[in-house]
Image 1: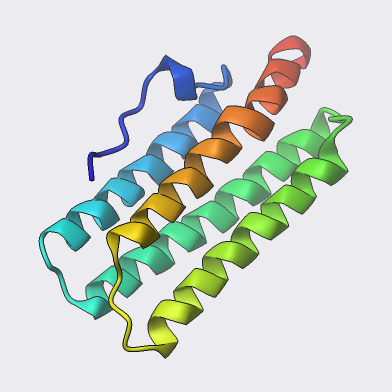
Image 2: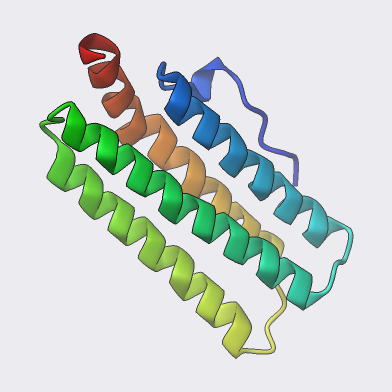
Length: 133
């Protein structure tokens, strides 16, 4: 699977959010490379944990900005954050609890998990913040 490449399509127009997204994409790419290079299950699990932990921090960062600037879609956006974290934790538990190998299917799930949120909910947030900041 190819790396995710940061470009203007993924930009939400708010530097501090874009910086977070670049970091998340970087960790995703590390995970993708680790799978391709046949790294150990433990290494893959540690990298997935890093991706999830950084995402939790990033969502907290976004939620602080939404509160500060009175984002009208805060509740919906926060609910989406909770659902995304829950789905990542379920994936993490599934991989750790079974003898199932981390697969390209998991990577594809994580790519959609990451990019769809950026392109939809975060795009709307970025447009709003660009006008009020």
